[in-house]
Image (cartoon, rainbow, N blue to C red; front, side, top):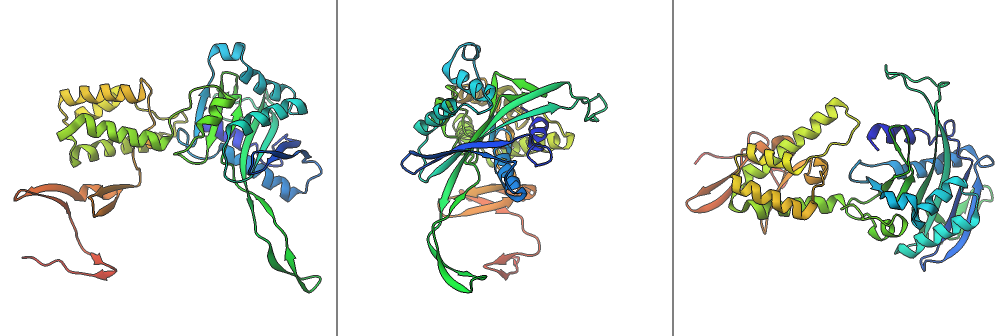
Length: 377
């Protein structure tokens, strides 16, 4: 799915656009036991609560594509005949109304997750009459030519509050307030089937993970039986290691900053074009970037080989490989942070056999909050 398609489904989660009539789910204790199951009708739920429920579900479609949101792709044989795909299809085809099927899904999820707190599994079914969009980009509300039916699953941690003393204004008395169970934003979840080219793609699901460094591979393995994608934070760490190890003594500040600047430029240009398709860079593109930074061909070959060992032929999102906001320089005892637009003010030098990091400073230099002057020797 691309950003435009995700945005189109996200806009469904408002009371006036959504056709979700019920929310199904279960409460799971910290011991991994189902203590209750429910199917709540939204028709009899106060408007404000409906909005909060839909907002919670919508967060499962939030975050950065390629970082928090990733595509899960099924193999053809899985779609043809596999227990995991049959279960997802059954949830969708029964519109979550079959308790035996939903319970089987809950048990599969619980068997794979290790959560430190109680949590709630929320399931929603929606039917979307896809409006026809002419080539001019407009939308004809009455021109629906297809229906997209899907399920959304959200795994929400439950925060239990402690009993506290409260004041009851109408009764004009102090009283103890018991334990409340607050539903936190989703930790993980998914949309099935994916909404590709504005229609259902039974070969794919959109997976959500709140934390870029933890995508719960055990959940992906249990529910989808596919190889989990490498978390964005791990991609960045691995890319840095590949760069350092393959370039060796040519891994200078100028080269690393040159690669970073080029990838930032790609991200900015992609955003300016408003291209809905995800931006990705391949091994070949990254090799060209190194070539532009005047890295030796021998080192570029070593980089390409190391990249393939770590990532295969997979193209990666530049957003996952670099820090877009700042450049960091670190020694064993010092950490320097420079805003991305000012990294050119930094350089490295070898003076009298000693290594130095030099930062050009104009006006406005402060030390511990005190303005200081820089004197000329």
